[in-house]
Length: 226
Image (cartoon, rainbow, N blue to C red):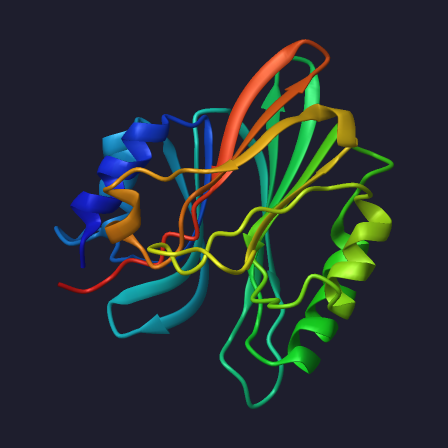
């Protein structure tokens, strides 16, 4: 695993909040990738396990420099398919309440439709000051039904092509923000290291709400093997 390269890319961007997918965690083990990434970025690690293999946990994760007030984990798995989940975290930004959900949806269209239907009721846009949904949605087509459902909740959200990293053609990775004016900038990170650290380019969102800036991103950091 190229944990060192992933950590170097995260240091390049220097975000306050980082959502990751396909991260391996080995509690109290020297090869704990999540602990290493947290240490290298000066962040609090929060694991969102989707699979457990012997002594390793595998799945979504969050690295945050903002205080985490609550953590919820939601199973989005579809029978007969690879386990999927959503990591749902409440963060504190000054006096604002922030809900961030990080996820990685399935490969088949029917899976993604079912998973988005489960995600929508979790997004508390009425009760939170700021709501962010970040992840690899695995949706290849801009007009896909899961994206149409999310656009109704997050209107006018831009997209950026992030996959494959060496020649991005598809916007598989997304960051959705409510209220929309809080999203000041959405971009991919195109450094030479980012193009080899993962098969997805990091997706960066610059957010500002009630005068409180926060730089967060969802790099879809699916660590490659050497």
